[in-house]
Image (tube, rainbow, N blue to C red):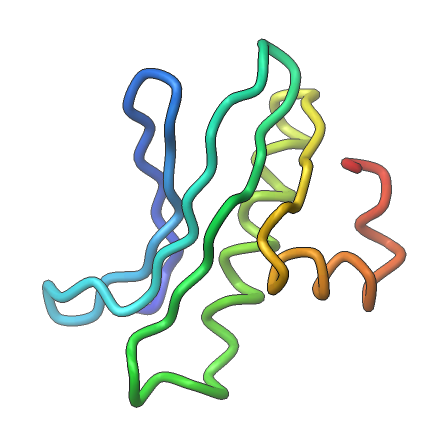
Length: 93
């Protein structure tokens, strides 16, 4: 429950959280070449604020980047704020 899932469609992708079959949080990205993703948007449905869903999705993106040996460009202000507050994630920037 509350596990972050990944879907990739050609040059785009998303990390998301479904609860009881309903998407409650979404973070989209696009591939920039073969070695980078750009996180461009994060949203959490009303009523889910403060549950850490946004950060969970950013952390999942970081795990994905480390696993694939790619970098992240956080254009989304929320994702950028997570990177700014957590210097331990700078290896994927």
